[in-house]
Length: 491
Image (cartoon, rainbow, N blue to C red; front, side):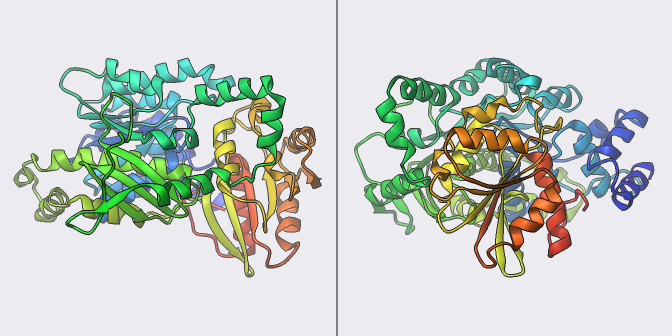
């Protein structure tokens, strides 16, 4: 009751943030988190990694729900333990009961270590490690070490990114009795989803080859997507007996010796193909950005792991008939149901979310590190859009903004950036100047900048790249201009 009152007061007064009620309850009742989540019949799915946590968590939770389970999740992206506690306060009854079958939780890499000391996840989905918030995590080997604690604490199945060597190596830390599964890429897609090592190796090659750098600098920003689309049309396929596309090429889909439970084999404009149980399945997707299709492969892999376990679970032990029916429905779902579920997932708030402001489409794209920013720029063609970049350096963003110099902005030369805002607006403008990207205006006050940006060129689609706290600020201000869905973070 105290937690619910604190949460209501924080939302009414616009103070404290989405995690504040959780901080209060952690002080009053340190056992609340473990006690509440331990009662779930299917336990906890923990999702962590540098890039894609919020969107992948949304995918997994949405797929579980569409396949019949009642799901608890932390949808706001507040991924510290206190953020999870705050989300629980919204869902539990006054008696502390959580009406759910399974929890799907996004955890920050560092706070995941604190979480698993309290709650052992049944499933862990570990996505990737990239250079991110060096002031908090240090170099990526330390980030991998943090995620190793999660792998070592999981008691059901650990799902790992086969293509990220630091993540794949965490299989060595998985305890006896815990299963290990992988999601992966076909060989011809590896260049579209580089690891941190790949990115820095490419930077070194570009530094040593000025001609290569010049050629790449004038490539269209959506070249990765265009090439990927051509890969879809060129990939040989046949039709399986169930009408889905089936693999029909003698060329191995991957030379990686680790077997992947789900492999992303082709990507296109809102389409993807996945290899599952020897059959390639094609589907449309509502998600924005080619990078989210690899996140979809990760989500499919962890949901499949839970489905396999469901067939062995004795639902008769569940007290409530409704819970038994949900578990049985989930256990009887097939691969077609899985694919249909992933096709229905919509973008998480601020991650490709599209908001209509007086007839103008405004798209929010969260960028928090070099790889995330690079992939966003490659996935979205700036032509025909006005672009805005908003950079803050609050704790949740990372204080060290030197990572902006690892991002290639040359794809924006043709269109320029109409508005730059945020606490570090002038740093961002300087960075763009070095890449010869024209900047229309610099306005540090985010509310003022958003007003000017959205009202200019009515009808022209807008795209706003922003760090985490600036995304919350932009989204909140858009809420004063138009209807914006409540993501649980207030306005």
